[in-house]
Length: 215
Ligand code: B16
Ligand code: MG
Image (cartoon, rainbow, N blue to C red; front, top):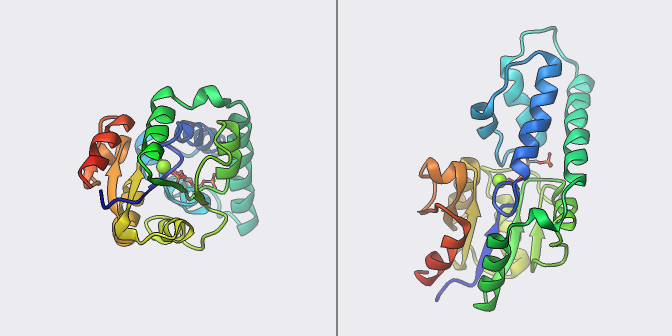
């Protein structure tokens, strides 16, 4: 096996916090009177908080919003999102994900997180994975979010591995693009798999065990 490491996206791959992002943005959009649905939400996967807000505001027709008003909207969404995260426990990490991670590790692979989220450390703590990964690259250590490859390149650097020796696992089309732009092989689940964005488009997380045997 030439593969040495796997870099996992967090929201929508390791855990279902993508649903909490949706609920929090939906509440903010409803309060503002802006149309928002799950299809628009799919465009927010992997992109930063402020970029997400800009995508939602494409449908906004009210009076001009100041920079402070934009910041306040993003803060309001994040507060609601963190309230939802605060209710998570290790039971929100599925048995399939945990046992697959453990098996991948037992094969000698290094495991890292590559997430656009500034809330990644809090999420990992809530689901009982604080300290589990060999490296964590997240929204707190990058300038450009996906589809820019920066977060995955940082994760590979933290693992001391070349991109060609790593597989990226993503649920976002923007994340799959970021992986490819960085020179990584990409396996997709969820929305990105349905869009056929990966080199491997999986129907379930445990299918990674089959994919790594071929790399
Ligand atoms: P935050 P990922 C991404 O996480 C989410 O997919 C995206 O919807 C979110 O806007 C972004 O994190 C920033 O999140 O507001 O928590 O900093 O999928 O890259 O793990
Ligand atoms: Mg994601």
